[in-house]
Image 1 (tube, protein in one colour):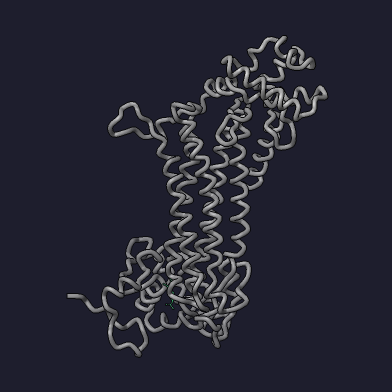
Image 2 (cartoon, rainbow, N blue to C red):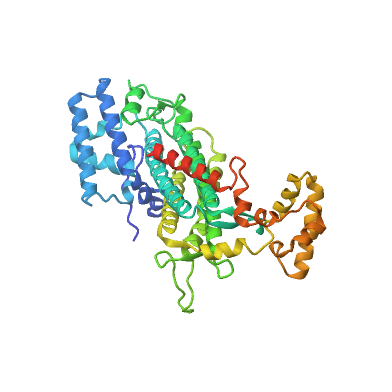
Length: 466
Ligand code: ARG
């Protein structure tokens, strides 16, 4: 037998309760309980504002606040467990308040609607989460910086098209991800400004005849401004889309780094060793050590990108103002935030203690290829040979070496001089990987001294942030 839900939620217009399946379908309490603290904070600010404009007395406001704080304590003690019949966190809190305070509790919802209330709660919550993501980004950056500092002299092959291109400083490679993380932080800082606008007081859609003071609640809740248009206030979810887009880019960056770690850890590359702290074994193959952490990060991108897409599609056809479709914004945002935070933490730990670079393997890798070929051409350019001519000559030289199975450094000086009389004995020094890296001193280039500069700037930036 299906249990009929009570019809007491709604006005006396309703005579029958919801169908139990529809009650389940309609309810958001299963997930929007996440917004409990923000809902309480918003209601406390609203109650005090109502007193400030004389809608209720100061004493009534303080009783409402005490009642709301009691709900907070009950929740902390695990004694506030709303059920489906409460529909959502907003109704759940109001019901409990009325149970605690009696008729006075019924005054709280004066001049307010769940539409502006839920928008307020969600913005307050997201604002806090953005701040938490910023902290997580800083930790991730510090982990990269520590590895960069520890390997300031180590080189790694640099690739284009995943073909060996030119050797670079390992710290330079890691610092590229620090730059990406800094852009992520800047993006979040920027969109936070648009999250931090208060919709409270828009009421259902049109504002309210109740004498409210929107600036009062906005200031009490730490918002920078109030929405100028009540219709926009209750139907704007741009901030959710913007956040999901920024979170998606965080995930893109983590995923690209993950992909690199995964192949660095392979037998074929052997550039890093995974420590036992972050690697897992195989249930079957005893020799295996698997890079589960970066693989999971790479794999989790799909959920965050999916939430961005889901939000865009959910919003695009909605007429003004509030529509129940908006209830779907919560799980998307909650999961986008949780996933981003979890991946940032895991990647920070991976770089703090989950992997060890193998300098001997990296050293061997940069010394055993033709990634110094450009430097031969640059050598000739410095002696007045036009670049395109030098490029052609060196191409032929590489071809010859490949046929003989030797490297450029193995060529005798006569061979060099046969190719072009400008070659001198200093060609050997010029094509040494260390010199190849050290020579790239253009601003932002991979030369060791340029990288030191980058490192110092990146650290100063973070110290300024802390
Ligand atoms: N649970 C709803 C949501 O998440 C709260 C707002 C409900 N408003 C309404 N008019 N039904 O969006």
